[in-house]
Image (cartoon, rainbow, N blue to C red; front, side, top):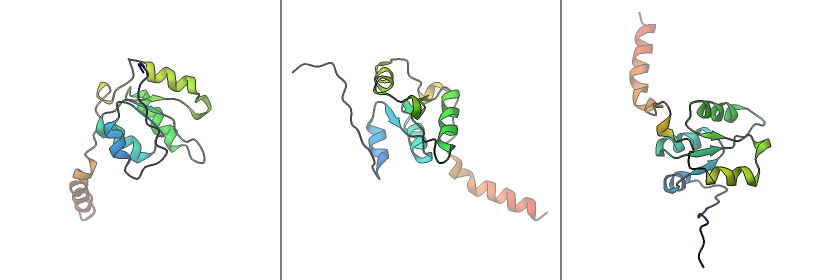
Length: 123
């Protein structure tokens, strides 16, 4: 059987989401902190569908990434099969490397920042 349909894997939840994200060509996901960081660290084009209830932190994160030109965003109220299909067919999707660089090395600077803070409080 010949088909020009793309391959899709739907994963509702995985404790090892990084494995799926790393292997993906594109990612459609919520905009939780860990998911967003994984998408950025693996440099994957993403369509973010943030949770908006009970808190708006995912919407804020997804909106900021969209505004930086790093990811696409669809509000859950606008999510339809057609919206997903349209995004998957686009060739000009934002790519994390096309936006401004986001420094993902904060953990390596925590020690230095803590020393600076302690040093300032002792003066």
